Length: 73
Image 1 (cartoon, one colour):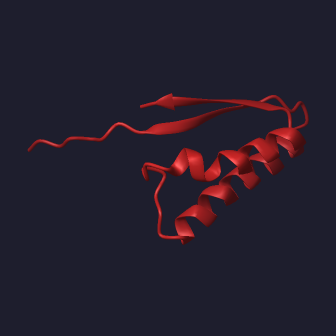
Image 2: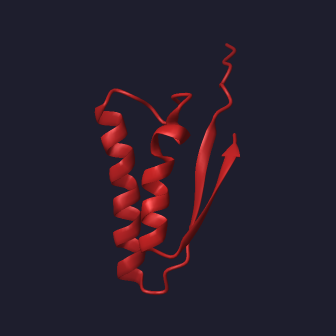
């Protein structure tokens, strides 16, 4: 059996927050972005996933100390 997995882009997030509670809070908010996106019937493999969510991720970046890159997988 053969399977072709399509390449896609994804956020790679590095949370710099020192306090564990703030790390968890940040991660929970990032996860909520994904859950909200899925509720729209979309997947992280949707071609416009990055464009649809980058502004939300940037807003959280202002609140929490993290860096992110966008990688092709």
